[in-house]
Length: 141
Image (cartoon, rainbow, N blue to C red; front, top):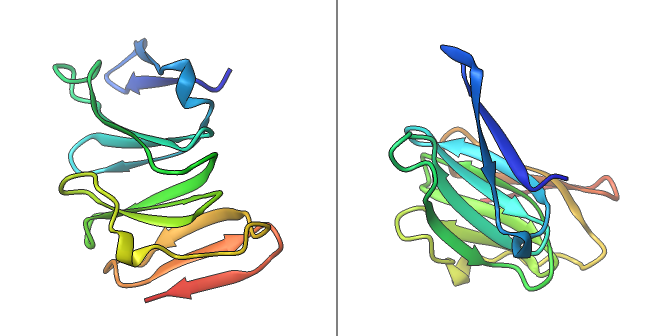
């Protein structure tokens, strides 16, 4: 379970498309839509996969990288900033949507016991807010 996505076209709901991912990724923990039909999917083993919902590209992974050492908890995207924020066992990593590389000088260190449960970018991409399992809410510029 939790290793496939079912995409439904509202014009043809009786013909959904099932996307299955490699078992090494683990289970799906988080996903977000961005751009013109692109999807970023975060997996329990620390992988982030970028795919397109365009029929001609749907079966191709545009990017597949293990950004977190052991686990990923959640992620979010900012079109305005052109970045993905991803929370895992080794902190919050910021990834450029231009070339899918980590922006190392923007990494946010958090305590290991402070598991991130939710993340959100502001509309203009200037602020990244996140909450933890312990009930703390943080906001970074």
